[in-house]
Length: 337
Image (spheres, rainbow, N blue to C red):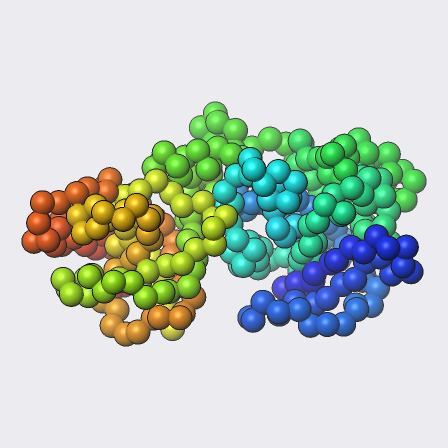
């Protein structure tokens, strides 16, 4: 999968758009302008969560592209548009850019175009966006979108906008209907609600994959190590949604090997009075130094609420019980210890 960044410069220059290829391994742009691209089938949107509904659209893009021997392309935005346009009321995001790109790659898309979202870019009319970006720059043969998708200035662009422009420019438009799970509409908002209420199973079913927390391992106070349960303390992006406090069964991969983990999300009331939310994970069976490394944890089950214990020994006893429960789950999920 190839990834490209697109920047928009509305300065009356001859080249208002600039493409850079993007190195997935080191997250850096490779500074050169791309040549004209070949015909493609495309979809666009924030795709926060890459949930069940998003995946239906992506699968349709890939199917149409393969049938017509074309490239499958997805346009997404970074940062999330609401982080730019309404920072005071912005929702927490379900997926960071790197997490989204990992999902897109696993689904089999050929190319991703990440548009740097700015207030200036948000003022582009829907028809202008279609002509200047989708047609002139990406040379679309077709567009696949969800039933309620809006794009362009004030989200005025709709599927009817695309259908009208398709007659003029000769591309096809396909719409994917609303997706429901057990009678409930699947959306990024409903997944946020489930995670915040501790309903991880529903959230993961809507996501069609485990919810992921990714971050840099930073140094903590080493209490876990002193009581026999060393933990990796994660530093997460401030805009990332953190699920309800509690103990979770998670899994991660280090140097190609999977590990089950007991993850605590909370304020550690048994050992501190500091009101700072922390995310830390004890990786069962792992020995080694992880400081400074990027780790991704898939949250598989929520074990219990966070509790305050009267003594450190009582805390240690409960951790042992948590690990026993997690090892039973790990057999179910085929995670080898």
